[in-house]
Every structure is written in structure tokens, then in C-alpha cells.
Amino acid sequence: MGYTPQPDFWNLVAEISWSGGARALLRLCQEVERRVGRTRSFRNGPREIDVDILDLAGTVRTRPDPILPHPRLADRRFALAPLAEIAPRWRHPMTGLSARQLLRRLPAKPAARKLTVRLRADAATATVR
Image 1 (cartoon, rainbow, N blue to C red):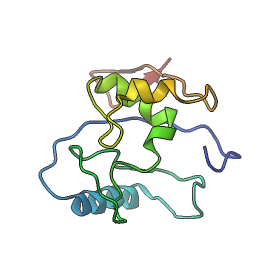
Image 2: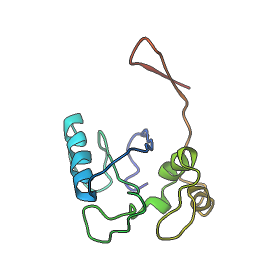
Image 3: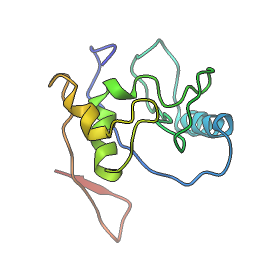
Image 4: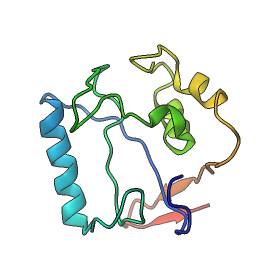
């Protein structure tokens, strides 16, 4: 997606509990990126980390920072596939379609490949298959 001459990247989707507003969550996401060492280069360029808010309890927000749901979510297999896995009942707040339904509308390429990660109980390392 976007700028393609870059290495493959890992992507994941996580569901969290949040009681604050959209802008506060965005600031927290940007702080996490900063602490990991993200450096801004150009739009869709390679980066160390990218934390996006895909949806916030069905909020529809057209003002920038953040726009909700994520404005390119319905076009991103790499976000929809894990979203469908962890939240099969989730529906896009604007279209009403599930993540699986949105996935079926996308072309096969660019593809997303599922990786299985096993965490060892005795260490903070992971094995990827």
C-alpha cells in the first residue's frame, strides 16, 4: 500500500477499553510512536511504528485529527483481516458492513499473510511461523 519500495511490515489489530475522547486517544497513540522512535519522513513512507485508531465505539468524525472511522480502513486488507478475526461482529459505522464483507470487496493484491506468534511464558520473546 502507498509507497511500495519498502520492507514488509508487521500489522496487528488490538481492541482496548478507552473512556476518554478521540483527540486524547490520538495524542496517546502519537506518544507511543514517539517513544518507540518514529521519525516522520513522507506520507506512507517507511516508519518504525504506526499506531492508528480504526474505530472508536462507532464514532463518526469528519474533523481531522482523528477522522473516524479510519478513512482508509475499508481499503486495507492488512487491517481488515485481523479486525475480522478478533471482532467478527464489528460493523463499519458508516457502511454497516462487517470486516469480512469489506474484505470480500477488495482485490486479492496487495495481500496480507497471517503469522502465528507463540509467546514463551518464561521470556518476552516470540517465535513466528
